[in-house]
Image (cartoon, rainbow, N blue to C red; front, side, top):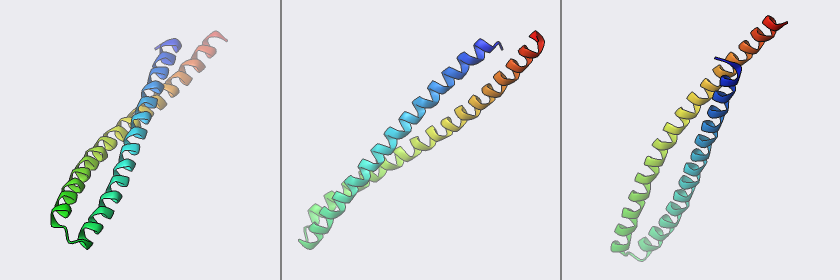
Length: 111
């Protein structure tokens, strides 16, 4: 590949990696929000237990299960994104090494 093509590929990979990092940040924000929601539900459950309100406890338990299921989905998606990020980082490193090799070879030939 030419130096220009490698630079274009490097820019594309850098952009792709940044997109993945942004998605990871959004997933982490969602998971943090879910944690806060879980704390609120736990507090409400404790209050319902003190009042011995079985219907409220059951409803809160159901909400907690939904949040936990959504958190597991977010966790899986986060794992997939982390794998993609590692692959992009590895490919970016290989392109950088290839670019470095090509530049050295070009200067050796032209010198």
